[in-house]
Length: 405
Image (cartoon, rainbow, N blue to C red; front, side, top):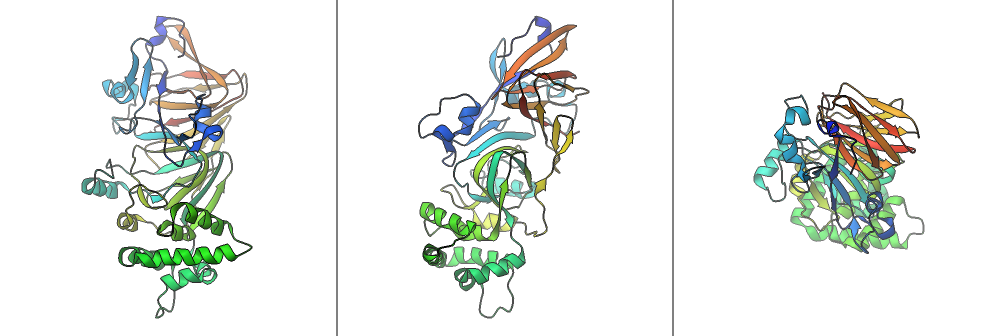
């Protein structure tokens, strides 16, 4: 816990957060468990450390660490005085985003997220599998690297795929067709899943046999063989990976995932921020609930889409501009001894220390107040803390999220 010099520092002040780790099967383990290392935990042997959630989502809500009362519900703390603690913007009455660290040691499911209207419909029809009625636009920023599938390949690439993968061409292109396009091929695959599932498993087996006999296989072919061994021939996701772009992000690189964009993270450690939702429409490569019909309805086909976000830099701060009203993510890379001033603040800000150690200074009843945060600490500054500064005690890096005005 941060230590304050006097009582006056408690009137408006930063608060540490206590957060939840999600142990999904695809998370990193043992000495590779990034989240355990970030939080200075001794990882439980064999236990996957997949996601760290920071926010108010009821599935894994954070707590405020209060000096006098102990842990308090973050959501309840906001609702006690949203004007002073959250924002002066009346549009938001609770925290509108969910902040995460995601650490993938294995492939996640092929998935997409609904827009707001679709989310409301899915939640009404199936609240068990779609637990809220919110959309889930999100950004992903690589901490060290990210290997992922993101967005559909172009029609031109799809035509080349059919020539290099005859099994797919035989499965998806009817003999009477004079031309082929990606969207028609994807819709044909969904039809076969519903009416002739054995054709999918047979095609997967044929592709595996051909690829195992090859001496020079592509990156996508290698992924297919690996996932075939772990998921079996019945999984439609094995065929779907051929339709998606493979991307590799270096540290600091960022992508934005709008609703309807198909994707699957394969390996890497990232910062994620999204609207406050856990709505995921899955297709395959998972033992969780899959909903091919819902996915077919929400998929977006846009071969001209550019998913990358190039941050804008001002001094030590980099801003990842995304077309969302719920969040704006920034990073602060502060050399030892340097300072960053935060002024004219009108909304809550959430911080996560990735590296180093820093002190935060503010004024309380004419007194100078200080607390110290280290690697793995997450904390918030409420809306009514209008000004403070951060000084690096060692070279430090943190990410923070603001609510756009």
